[in-house]
Length: 101
View 1 (cartoon, rainbow, N blue to C red):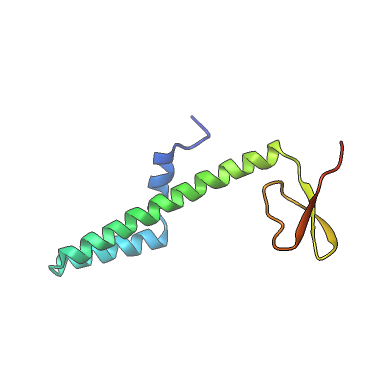
View 2 (view 1 turned 90 degrees about the vertical axis):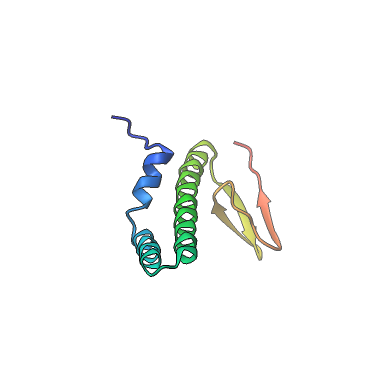
């Protein structure tokens, strides 16, 4: 079996979390109460919440792959030099130092 889940599999897995169940219950109760607008709104929020969770999970996987490709760089702020990931910002007044390898 494929060890890397597809976006669709991630989407279905995201529907299992607590927030998704609450939103699904909200939509169902709204529909039973005769409030189709509220049910549609709850369903839309559920769909948006799940889609954003999938995008976040995919972005985290991509970000992890980037960290394996690029070594950490040296950066600092307020005169202190520290190690940080290659794609992180230094913030206001910060600096980045590049050293030959």
